[in-house]
Amino acid sequence: MMWDDGTGDAAARPGRRAGLVSRRAFLGGSAAGLGALGLAGCAGNDALLLAQARETYGPMPNEKFPIPAVDISKVDPKYYRRVVQYESKEAPGTIIVDPGKFYVYRVEGDGTATRYGANVGRDGFLWHGDAYVGRKSEWATWTPPKEMIKRQPEAAKYARGMPGGLDNPLGARTLHLYQNGAYTLYTIYASSEPDTIGSGITSGCVGLLSQDMIHLYARTPVKTKVVVLPA
Image (cartoon, rainbow, N blue to C red; front, side):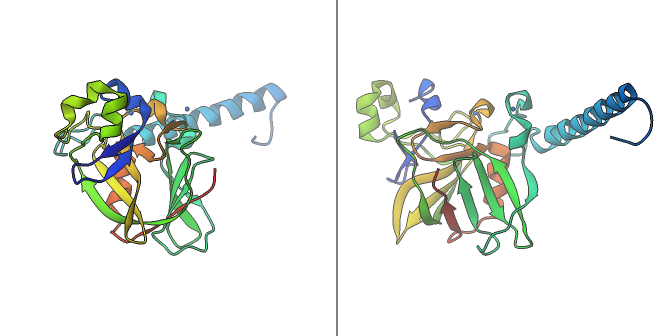
């Protein structure tokens, strides 16, 4: 399905939102002792990871529409935001989307990248290639295109636009992808549905948790290069 941000440009958006309109050893001691120590170490690491995640994905009360904390129990820890080793020939700041692994990377330029978990296009809606951020939107108005209204008549009530807000399909922030001056209809957007991260559900777009999208958006100027890898 295609989605529009109120400026006349349509953008794909996840089917899950259609319900609204259509957010997973030390040396010494016996073998048993070693096992206990190993488990204790894992438990400590897990506790630290969860504490960091609760902070990273906590509420954002100062937003125009206050954003609640993410229910991190619905997100596989491998998709939590983190800095990872990542060698790339791309310039610092470049965004690389890896739909096959459900990750979005921001190249940091020192052999590392900030990695975000994502949802991506479902089968039949996967796109790849080079693009750039041609436009940025905060809490944009969403207008369903005529094609969507035809398929989903209940969307007709928003034919004149749905104001920005927590239930708006475009989310808190949107990066609109362009090629050669033309809008590709693909976006990187903010998702409020944590159970979608790590899945292919959209009509080609890429969704990050709202807290992650706001983090990426603030560090991404217009004209930033975006590389979408083949799935």
